[in-house]
Image (tube, rainbow, N blue to C red; front, side):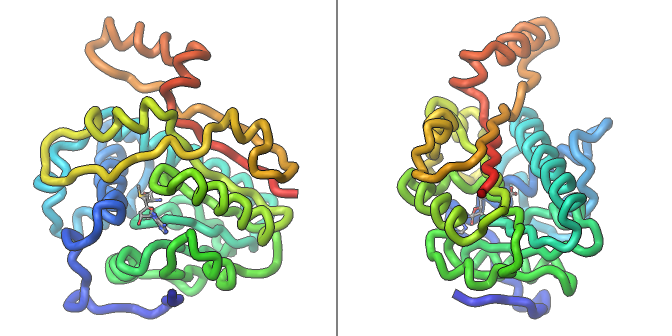
Length: 285
Ligand SMILES: C[S@@+](CC[C@H](N)C(=O)[O-])C[C@H]1O[C@@H](n2cnc3c(N)ncnc32)[C@H](O)[C@@H]1O
């Protein structure tokens, strides 16, 4: 594990295609966020993602195929929900630290920074290396190259609470006991803080890798329906905390006439609960 605040030259840039499949998912999300931001009207305002994908001449289409419209909607909506929660939190705590677990090549800092917050990106060493090579960090941005399952990343987090811990698109890559241990670690180490993470229902976790692929050489790693929001409501972390769960969706799918029916179905409770991803917010006492 190491912390990294230095710069690297382009000649030393790590090769993205050499990353492990889980690490490559950070390129998949970047590709789709940038595509969502390029739409007219845009699904997300993310000039840093557009600029980064333009600047790096990576063969995204050969890796991931054409951008998938449902993936664009999913990732844009998810990012907007994280951004809204982050902006609200920083309005109340302007100098606080945002700890972005599994941050990959997320450009949220450039969408949600308030000019005084601190940012700590935590990801696997090869991803942090790539991030630092292509996304120049400012003085309030820090990085820790470490698995989130290794509790030592918490030593790098600013001790003064509260912090916002945001695990966008991370929990589906953790085994359920790892996810539960990570929640317990955050609850123990970050009192009076907020933990945000998103989950996939089991069915969606199994179908998404096939449904969201449109050619390309990339193969999704196993996605897991990590922590069921309903299980959290029953307090399976062993702690008392306020939990809020919100669906990430619905999605426009198919031609106009069927899309309207599919949209309506997604708004019904059983379909929402069984199929739609969810954003979970835990207020740590
Ligand atoms: C789907 S990407 C999401 C990236 C970013 N948060 C976003 O929304 O664009 C998943 C990220 O989680 C990271 N990740 C997965 N397992 C991890 C672990 N055990 N420790 C640290 N990072 C991990 C991957 O390296 C990758 O960057």
